[in-house]
Image (cartoon, rainbow, N blue to C red; front, side, top):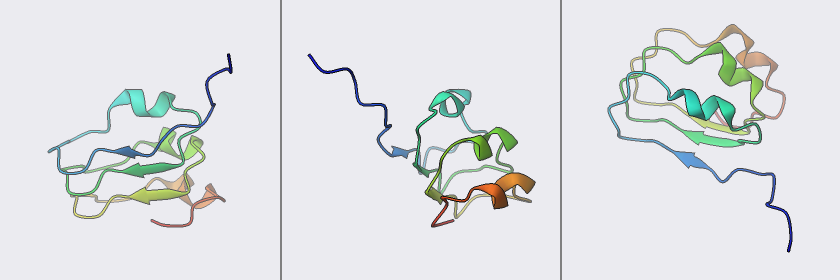
Length: 79
């Protein structure tokens, strides 16, 4: 038996009328791709910047600002 692979598959939560990001997302320590487009998010949590995100899709929301630490995501390739 092999141990479970430590990576997370991409998480897609688009078009779910979310007004807040589910807290469980922040526990996915190996998450590299998150799609929360087409929701009703007004903000993204600062803790999101602690994940190794390479792709963050957040278009078509009500975002007023982005977390200041977003710039520290060195692996981020697409926002």
